[in-house]
Length: 622
Figure 1 (tube, rainbow, N blue to C red):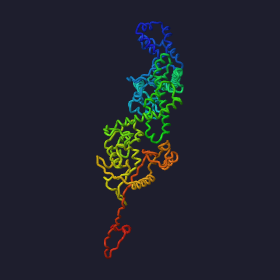
Figure 2 (cartoon, rainbow, N blue to C red):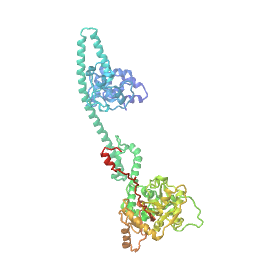
Figure 3 (cartoon, rainbow, N blue to C red):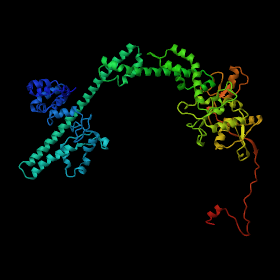
Figure 4 (tube, rainbow, N blue to C red):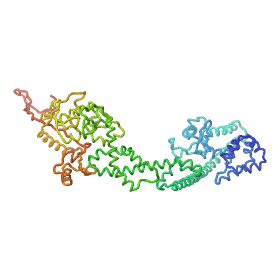
């Protein structure tokens, strides 16, 4: 606290009135323990103290105060001790009428502090001198000190000189008085003017040299202050770390404290301060500990997921859903100071199957809540959850897909919806129109919408024709496109909107096999993404590798001893990367019409024919 503040905080004016009545040697002995800024504050307490400290007799006490700060530059001859202390230690703007404070930069050559706005308004460069002061002579700037501060910021060269406008006006007024005396013909006026100008030039050079010295001191003082504050901060952090280590915390987990604004203050740690900041820092450390334990559990879940089969991976819950379970929440937020040990991780790894099942049930309940309620008169269908039905597919309107530009989002079937990336943040919706389209396609492939699931439809692998569309015409064939059940849904949503009734025709086994062969050839020749296959009995296959369908079936035959691997039962295909080509079925060769020869005008007797090019070369226009 400053001296002035200490005197005022007492609430009594008796002690203030006593100070001016003391003998000067005793008063100066007392005030000699202060710094210059302290003397400046004491001078503002009363008029009597101000009169004493601003008099010539107080030079000794100001000198003693400067000695209390080793290295502090002495007061220049053209400034008082109070003015010098005000420039160095107080941070208000010196521009007339400005009330800005906390100005950290000192313009030592101009001997001012100024905010950016005042600098912009009052800083004058020689190039703008004539425009701003047309009645003044530019040579007056040779009598004044200058600065290079922020020259580049104003679009000037770094060596451009800036002058302080109030100083320019004051100097012009003084010079004007000398010139007036010269004009009046007073004796010695011209010599006095010349001597004044020479003295001002010398003084300006001395101010510039002293400004460089002051700038060096200021930079050194700032660096010393920074190091002193850092030493206090390091000592405080060290004391806090020692106390937390005594409580049982791992030293490696306390590194974050050195960046915490509460812990790294440049103040000594007292017992009172420790009692105040300990709960807040413990909360931060516990939060970091929970995050580390959650990260450990996440890595454990990723390693466990790699050991699952393809279908298990497809329905494996997202780690956000997994971490939300009560079991893992209890593990992550358990009280203590350490991270999970290897024994604890093994214990929790054994619990992951049960926890994953619980998270999967929770996901099913959440998806089931989005479906409309129905009355099932025949009772529950055994071993089939309603969310697994193909007709219970949800729509993600935020995802870009091949149908999004037609007013629909991406259709999410089970189990693909479990691995949909934005399921945790974007709510899915049930679209009755989409459900009606799916039901019509399921009936077209001769399955029941009440029991048919996506994997069952994939295993059925039928092909249908849209009889509501006109035949497709190409250069050589006329026919209809054959669709998988997924392709048929996409076709209906894009081509038959507004509730149009679609008629489907199921292809026979022979025609279906021919279509599959042509689709396989189109997929093989396509530049699209290669389909990913995996075994449904072990962890072999995607996402770690991209085996072909043949390699996957060969693996099932050799490793799992299954002679005829079935699609969606023994081998699975990643439907997220599936490219389904559309080929034509029931194509018929079109009859090619003979090309008609262009008719030529009959040649008249005596007429000769010439090529247009020949006629043009001959100079003929027609």
